[in-house]
Length: 309
Image 1 (cartoon, one colour):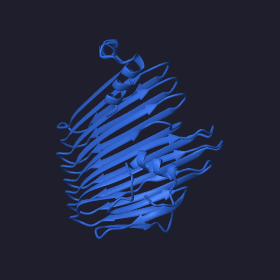
Image 2: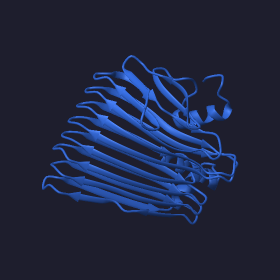
Image 3: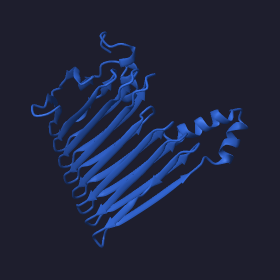
């Protein structure tokens, strides 16, 4: 990492983007609403928007084996921002995009990051997108993150999204919308952990508009203490397509979780499935691990880590 970055910066970047050093290839690092580092590559160009806060990422057609990192960190109390990032992925490209936001708040004012990411994925292009959110700090100020992800998939395009809220985020309102064209493929895995008095809401709207389009949505979450979570995953089949929605959640303490999966078939050849399960950790699982020498707390932690992998 850059010598100008302190231990807090380095820890946040590691938590949200697994960055131990400046990444190879294209990257854009944002800190406290300011640019903190940028590099484009031969095939991936990053530029600052001229009409509003955010960046444009343009990936040339046919780009293979490259990645772009776009992490955001906030280390000052009272920072609030709204950022728009647009991704233009050329036909036949095959790339990894690593995003995420980390907030360290030691003060008494709210720190908040709202990000709108829009993907335009060209014909037969493949995108693997990972996004982690993490909060920490000793202050009483809230750590708030409200991500929106909008995806347009052309014919034969695909996106694999892995989104994770690790811990420490006091409030989050997540919104994801995907429009899939002919033979397009959508795979979304969302993992959330809330504790204390935290609140998390996640809304997904997946529109399978093209013949042969597919979607697999998996939501896994753990709610501890008095935290609350609400899920609204929706899949709409508007052509001969296949969609599967699965929501699995673990309750601990006095937490509350509501899951409202919805599927709508508007074509006679649409095949859509939804499943939802919410419950406590099974007692026999804890007992089995305790017989191997773990304490009850260690057994619970091991089960939760495995569940959220």
